[in-house]
Every structure is written in structure tokens, then in C-alpha cells.
Length: 264
Image (cartoon, rainbow, N blue to C red; front, side):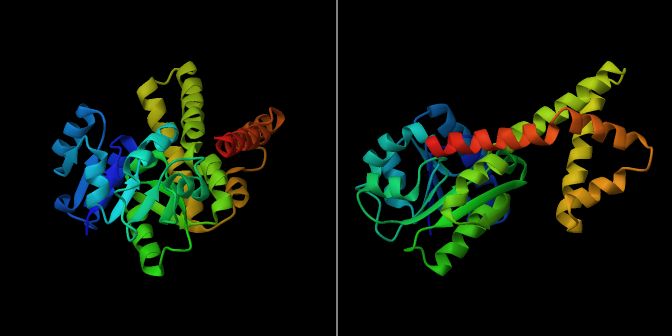
């Protein structure tokens, strides 16, 4: 069983690293291509996989083919490889905004197609990926896709009409979280804390809070109330966030992200 990657950027590297760590495939079973010679050499050195600058070589060899190029390059790449992809090949696309209908229209035929949206925490094995499957994908192949996508974090199967929502709440949201961490750290620095230490405190607080949501199963509002002691410090901070429209700003940002994804 060969797994192929067209595109060897950050997300592909995160996926390859997860696959190898979970021992789903060996390095000998993975082949990847990229137009950048530097990316090809880097992937070969780090992962020990076979690499090439020839997309056709990957398309012909792969039993599972992952299209990991940016959306704007999809028409060019599909036009190049569509004649080389076998009917039985399972194709996984990570491009936002490119629907299964769009992809199959450009291939000119129905495919065993999985469309997904991972996020950058995959780089540290903590990704969150939403995926959907076309009707030709068997239950066994769905499980295979879930295993691949779950090798670098968590993977959840959703209807395709929710994938743009996945972009807003998960695919792009690490940027919002990084801004939140940076803002908290900036104020700690203003109060005299060394910046490196401020980042440690802020990031660990976010990590621990997220873990509490996932592991306790409690509603985020309930967990928030647990921190807010009567007449305490936390409720004063919460009051300021509410007065300045914190929740509405986050909701508006997610909405803007989803609408942009739909229009791509």
C-alpha cells in the first residue's frame, strides 16, 4: 500500500510525521512530490521517504493520494495528474473552498474522494480535522482515511456542508488563539513580567483550559463559573470582556472566516 503526497509543505509534513509516528505506514511506503527542490530534499532528509519533483510519478504510484497543494494550484495539478489516477485510488484533498463536486468536475469523473480540513496544531500532534467522504468511498476506506487524519490529532467525520464551518472554528482558529495568548502576555509584560515567561503562563493557561473542556465534558460556561468567585478578580475581568463585546467579536470573526471559505 503506497501513500502519496502532492505538495510537501507544512501541513503535508505534519501529516507524514504523524503517520510515521503512529506506524500506519513505513517511510518506504510514502512518496511525495513538490515543485520546490528544497522542499523535496528537506522531506527526504527528515522523513526518509521517496521524493520527486514529478507529480505524475506520485499519482501513478499512490493507492492513497493526498492533494496537499494550495487551492489556487488545484486546477493546474489536477489537469496534470487526472489521466494517471486509477479508479481504485483513494484521494484526500485538504484544500479549503474546493468542494467534492468541483474536484470531480475538474477530474472529469467520479472519484473515491475524501475532503478534509486540518489545522496547524497538527505540527505538534494536536491537530483537529473535519472530513467528509463521497458515496464511492467504502466503510473500510472511510476508516482508513480517519486513521490517517487522526494520526496527527483528532479527526471527526461531518457532512460536507459543515466543512466551511470547520474552517472557521478549527482550521483558522489557531490564529485567533495565538492573538489571545499574545494579548494576555503583552499586558503581563506591561506589568513587569519578562516576555518569555509571560508567553509560558498564557499558553499553558490556554492549553490547560482546553484540556478541561475536552476531558471533563462540562459546558464551557460551567467551567467559567467555577473560576469566577463572588466579588473576585476573575468576574471583574469577565465583566470587561462582556462590556467590550468579546463574544460578539469572536462570533463575527468566525462568521467572516466561514463566508470567505464559501467564496473561494
